[in-house]
Image 1 (cartoon, helix red, strand yellow):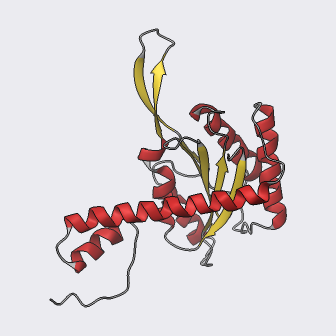
Image 2: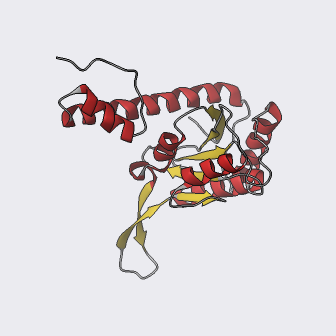
Image 3: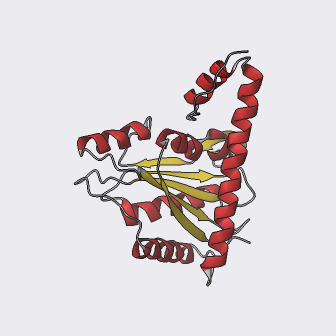
Length: 223
């Protein structure tokens, strides 16, 4: 069981691809029944919130901040994760907690995308944090103290909402990181399989994959 687990790691390239993964509608859109008007109509709700950045193009906002402060360092962003005990929290509450977490820790200095993934049996939040502050251009470094603050703030918010937290997070963090890596690999495999069906030649395949955020080394396309 995952309980309330947090993790964060650096993003060194293809920021646009990570934004796409975090905001993916197949993962962030949930079906909501309207009980208020007693008509039981279903609506779709997307659980994505952009903090301090353009909700239509958060990647462009983050890159513009880097350009303004002339920041060309390798680590472009940080990708965070907050998972909850299966069946313990609704999509709406999970997203609310994620937004509060990000606003409390980073909201006064950094651009962040908060997304709640609802496509698995355990609801979980992703947040993508620009490594460059929009205030003064100083960078977020993700020190041990930063991670401790992330975990402690997450635990505090979860307890406020009556949710369970773990007392020994290290072994759970390893399991979460393995799950995230598997999710990324499955997404890459789906993109490759779909593109192979669309394309007859490698150069065409390469162009389509490039538009999806991937890059490959040069390969001779002669028959």
